[in-house]
Image 1 (cartoon, rainbow, N blue to C red):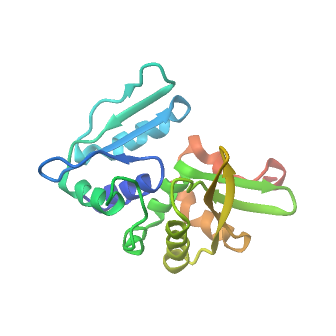
Image 2 (cartoon, rainbow, N blue to C red):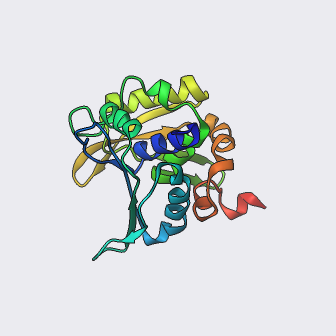
Image 3 (spheres, rainbow, N blue to C red):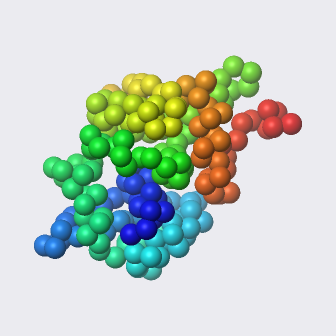
Length: 201
């Protein structure tokens, strides 16, 4: 697995990607699915995963979704053990050694990020880390600070009557954050890095 593919896979795991159960040989596969609105992004990921070997992009019957699976790989199996040690996805203590490249950050943001911009007084990004614990989210914010010099906080939100956590990028880090990820954000998801039209003029 080359470094670019690995960086993309790690970003996908942090976001919407899923790793299949380990085989007897301790191999796993990356499974990616998106709403049809994100089909250009899915196709791009499919091309990027070509070095691993990939199945066809297929529609999901009964849903407005398309999906694909990579071939099984021992290297993906290693990531499966790190991120799913007991079956549920977690953030491993070694995340600081994994989330190291802006490409990984961009994939994560394209999957789970939201730009919160309100003219004249508010410019922030949010990362939907609802499936992770507060401790997991704190590991992520520490990594953002140490590896990218991005200041972020963990904030609570109510989702379907349950308390969840998400990551809030501070305003003072937004320009730096955007500079890091902008080269990798696809045109179909460019709305996640744009300010309001009035600000662009």
